[in-house]
Length: 356
Image 1 (cartoon, rainbow, N blue to C red):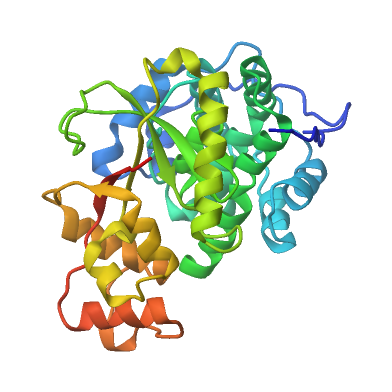
Image 2 (image 1 turned 45 degrees about the vertical axis):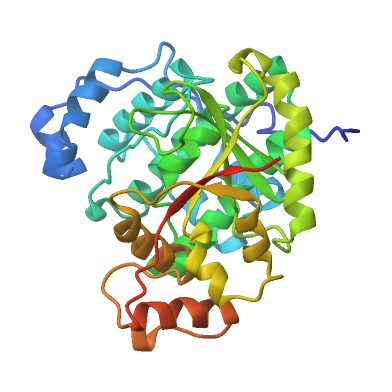
C-alpha cells in the first residue's frame, strides 16, 4: 500500500488562546446552569474527580477552527460558522469552560482507550455554546491525537479521513434537529482517542468484546474490529467494502499488532444486517451482498427496539414519534423500510462476523 502524505495544519502559530484558569465553581450554580437529567447527575462528581488539566486548555482561534472544519473536516460553511461563533469563553460561560477542561483532560488521559465516553446532554437553555462545547473539547486534543497516530505509524491521510466524519455528522444534526449542533459528540470520543479509523468506504473500531456479547465462539475481552458504515463516501458497493477490509487487513497488524493475539475478527452490529431486509431487496443489491459477507448471530433481546430506533434515525433522519404512512419513500430502500414499519415487520439490529 502506498500512502500519500497530507498534513493540513491544526492551527497556525500564534493563534492559540492562552490557557485560562477558573475560580472555584459554585456547585448549586453549576447544576442550575448545566441542567443534567437525574440519571446523568453522577457526571458532576465524575468531572469533579477528573479535575482541570495541568496548564489549563488552549483553544485555536474561531477563524482557524472555521477554516479547519471547512477545508479538512468536510464541514459545510454554515456549520463551521456556527461552531466558530460558539467558541467557549471562560468569562462568558464559566460553567461550560469547567466542562470543557474536564472533557479535555479525560480525553488526553485515555488516549488509545476504547469505548465511547457517554458525555451527558446539557441544558438546551445553554444555546449554541452548550451544543458545541463537546466538539470544542474534542478539537482541543486534536494535536495530541495526531501525535498518538504518528507514534503508532498511522499515515496522515488516514488521520484526516477519520476526522472528516465530523462534517457528515454536523450535516445530519441539522437534518434531524433543524439547527446546527453535534448531538452525537460522544461518538467522536472514539476518533479523538485513536480508537477508530476510516479506511476507504468503512470505519474500523478497536472493540474488546464485553460481557454478554453476541459473538459465538469468542471470549469476553477479545479485541475485535467493529465495522461501521459512514453515510457519506460514495457507493456502498461490494468492491468498495472489500477494498476497505483488505486495507484493514494490512493496516491493523502493522499499526496495532500489540492489541491482537491473532488475526483480527471483524464484527458488525447494524439494522443493515436484518436478513428480512435483504429478502425484500434485489439479490444483487449492495445491502444484500454486504449481508451475505457475514455469519449472522441470533437476535438479541433488544433487537427490535434498537432496530426501530436506528432505522428511523439513520435511514430517515427522524427522531421521536412517527406515522409509518407519512415516512418518505423516495428510494427503493426507504420504501421497503417504510412499508416494513407499516406492515408491522419490526426491523431489527443484528450482529455478524465478516466471512473471509
